[in-house]
Image (cartoon, rainbow over all chains, first blue to last red; front, side, top):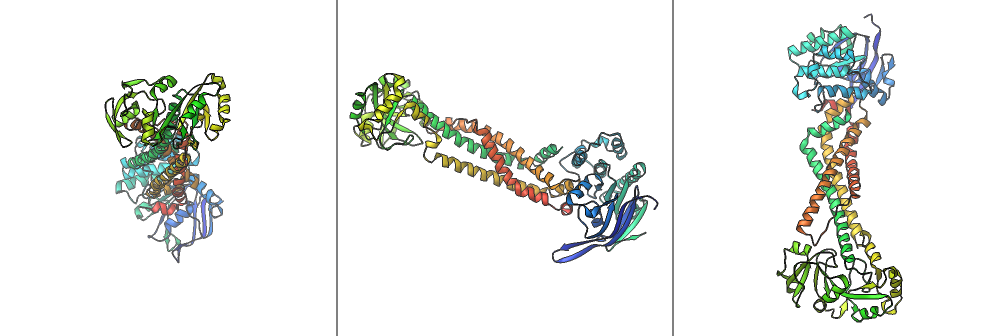
Length: 226
Length: 367
């Protein structure tokens, strides 16, 4: 890896309290991700992949360790600062698309812009993104009128509209058939190549992981380099 | 976009939205109808009091502006009043309370009434010609479906309606004064005396002069202008507390309806709340989203409630025009909608806080 690091994680731990039992989800994660890198994280259920993503996305705080995101100390951030992080620095793509069902595709994307207080949707680069995603003609449709593949493309567009430094994709093809999976993975690969978009992707699928520049495995709350 | 999200959320569950709107409309209509009835009935009483054409009213001791006591002024009181300076004419009447708020039957001397007030304008029939005939006004006739020649039982006695008159003078039902006095065991006694002065400019002077008479020391005496100005909600016994109770009840209804509706909405939208948070929505944004929805529902429901109040007014005018009157009180439109918004926001508070505090990860995992 010869690119400047955008994510540096050292000795990261996360302990959940479930009832009266402490559950150690992360037990000292060390990971460095270069700017513009496409990294796949594989591992069994319960290995800590989603917890790592949730911490990187600022959805939950870590217990100990350090994370530097674009040079900023994530663990030192307040709740509000982590909320701001989700508006601009990281973008999420989920397995279940997670589009708001009451809004059409255009409005789902616009809402993300509005929350970030920015306007990128009309810009040329984003029009190019929409063209790459192949959803420009589906923007007036609500999620229920779209296929899974189309919904996931809209979710990717929404995640990218604020030009995040990092795109976190949690099982982005988990709900898609083979054809749509290949299309979405191709799109992610293309975004990475064309715009230098840093992408971290969780996947169970080895074929999907092959689309990435690098693959790491998580096991029992730790990252094992491959 | 936020407003569009609010609108789309409302459209997403049309039945629930309609039910909440309907409940808020009922709440606003309840306030507007009761306030409108209070104002309407008091204004009608005011109009009928003015319609007599008197300058001064002398009431029996122990009566309030809107309350009656037993007729206790002796007939001689009228001639006593007539002897005072600047008195042009005086007419004693006997009033007996009937069903409904501010409704009564009034016993009058028809000849004297014609001289004093210009008489009735008959819409049907003629004046009474015997002790078993009465005259009613058009609203009472409409409510009881009576017309000239109809038989009616009143004060445990059968009567014939001899005529139906235009409303606007004293009561809705009139009968010969001696008959009413005898029937109510008040023979020779008046409830109130209407007085006209020789010069309208002297009314206050004459009121002061009458108040100074030893024979009228205990009688409430008002200029007609002062009397009608006292006919207000605050002078109607128990009316203000009653209205306050109704407003309080409507606040509780609004609170409960919005609370239950938004509570279920928040449960239903758990995942959406998680999505919003993953996009960078603050807890404040989430709570204001629900508040905007609440305010939109309250304003729309309030507008529906205003529409319903016209329906209430029409129903009252058609079904019970004599017993109840309702007017549209425009000043209460913003008041009732503000109360509805307040009650709804209180109802939205707990669901809103619950939504704002929702853990984003748990919310995103919600099925």
